[in-house]
Image (cartoon, rainbow, N blue to C red):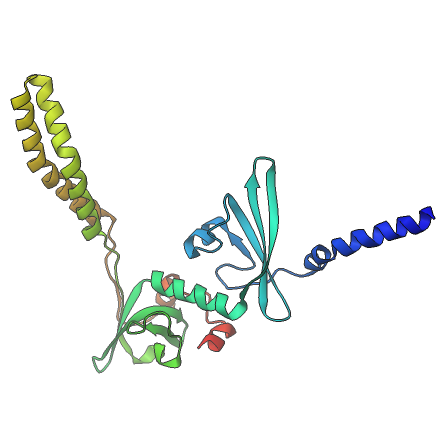
Length: 263
């Protein structure tokens, strides 16, 4: 009787843990060249994946037979690191389409000048010794049809430009707003130190209201100029140029087979 009870107990225990055992038998699955099979905290924040998981640490992807992804998420608690399994998180196709959309939105923009002076602009997807693949800037990021991807032979390119990054507009705006808010306060405090009078303090605040935004605007211009990067202009491709440009590509390691499926 005890033996039957023991075997029944083991059977129930295995039945309850069967999904976990089956999951552990799967191999982690590479969802993209940039993420791999494990989603780090940095990549999670970049792609805004699993945003509702608090104290996220990392996540591992597994692929089901029906092309749906399961995700084992590890997160921090008071008692240490715990994990949870999210079944059927997304289909593989939808996941890769979403990742590509985010990469295109965040990518550096490029301009290609052909020998006949025709210009083509967009996001650099991949680059090789033979050609470059560019996502057309006229597409809205939700269209991954063939019309949105253009492959250009390197021999047809007369000049290639990677647009520089500039935040001058944003830094001057923030500098002006900060100066507008802080200037009157600094002016009033400065005047109060020398003359504790309501009228003169008001005058100091007025001067601060005028001077603060001007100082903030100038500081924003200087900071924006220092942090900006110039355009990268290449007129004849060399092997070193191609290696250098690959760092600006959405897929720096080359075009995977999955991209052809998305296209």
